[in-house]
Length: 121
Length: 166
Image (cartoon, rainbow over all chains, first blue to last red; front, top):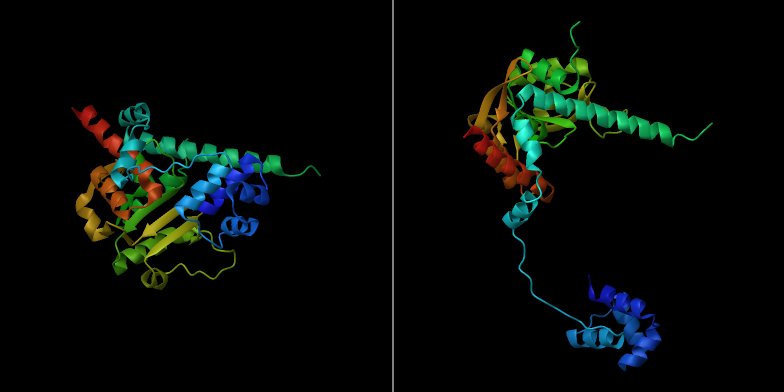
């Protein structure tokens, strides 16, 4: 989220006009408009002041950036291993035949949805 | 009465019967290893020698290959010169979608992948299949965000397979 989006969101949630927010923060309405349009960038202190005037507290925190491996590990936790174990018990042909069956079923569903979408004549 | 092969079985069958030199890679290869994911197209890495290009062209011609996603009517000549001029082709055929890859990111060409392939019987024909560790390797090397879930599943599959074989 950019600072302009954050500012607009805070003002929207507070139900204030730009003029009302500016008055509350001790700024001009045109300055608030410039910040919300992205024509000017606020300092952290200004952003904190405006967000505070809308009734919110600005919190910033440092969080570790996910590495590629960490993301894969996170996804791995959600893998349904029961399906994999079932597949491992099948032959290669059966694994591919079940894929073909799933594909055929998917095509059939797509056909059904397309047919449903056709307007009644 | 014998069942008429369709889709994957038909495409793999005609390629194998015509002795096209290829390695099965991608989603169908993952499925052959035991993945539970569904894929719509077959990915193969094909050898780029002239004899193989000729076999590929003759074998797929009856299935009317055409560039997938191209507007109808766009001139496309399915021929050896076309294959020679390009490298990777995403095609639609009357038997389904097939991607012909002359080279893959992180894996190289047919000759680079062949040492990392295994021979398996698929629908009664010996077929080269990229092995599971190398399938993971090339997906990791490609570094595409869309592959993260796929890599996670393949790594889990490798772990499960090791347990299964114990």
